[in-house]
Amino acid sequence: LVSTASYNNLNLVAVTLNDGNDFNDHINLYKDAYEKYRKIEILKKGELNIYSELYYGNYFLTIRENFSYPITTHEDVSIKFELNDTPSEGIVGQAKVMINSEVVHTQDIISLKIENYAKGFMRWFKKYGK
Image (cartoon, rainbow, N blue to C red):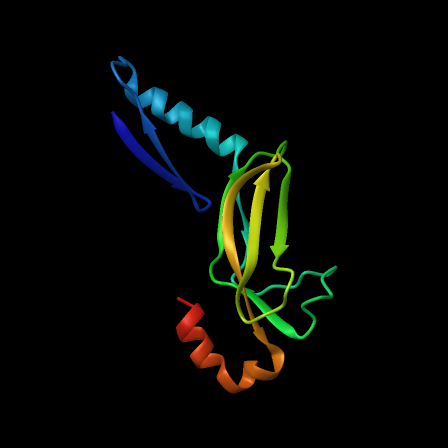
């Protein structure tokens, strides 16, 4: 039996094979998962503020998409920002989301000089924002 369930924006799939109690087992699997896991938004698309970052001070840094992930209360979530050594416009690095020190998601960091932001945002968005 294959079934799906959604609760609090967390979508799950359960699969059982040769199980004489499929329906009850799926219900119990879902109950257990929804008690242990919650889905949290880790990255939010748009402007990225890296508080200790001074080298890219004249640049608007952004990421393209939101990223959410299901975690338990015992897991450690961290984000590592890796930027190129030379500031420039375009893709300048990566945001790496880690759960218990294991990378689970990587996303490009994109930059635009602040002075060019107002002038050419639509051109920049067409090139990098998709």
